[in-house]
Length: 141
Image 1 (tube, rainbow, N blue to C red):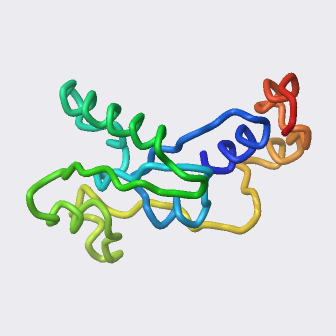
Image 2: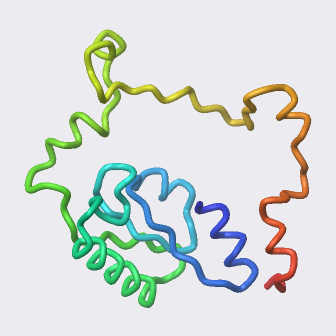
Image 3: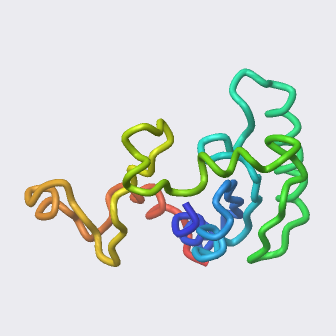
């Protein structure tokens, strides 16, 4: 999202990224971001907890109004009173532990080049970025 946010900002539209992955967000360096120290997938709060989600969104919008370019604001919410939840959801498990652990690390290896599911997908790539075509009508800044 940070790369898309940079392009949208380049065209004059302010953006803010919400993240639960601080190191990745810092590496991408979006124009502005808020970081919530919650498990991945819960960037806007817990499911079925409207009051928490409302508080997170209010804090996010307040951060957006005050954020300087390149700033990552840390939201003041906590998933739990201790950080033991990170032991099972934020750290990969050893290969020998995966068969018995529901939180096993099933991520695929990362590459520096685009990866495609099939050769036909790779051949179908259009360098003009058809998913970003809506940006063509905006004035570049």
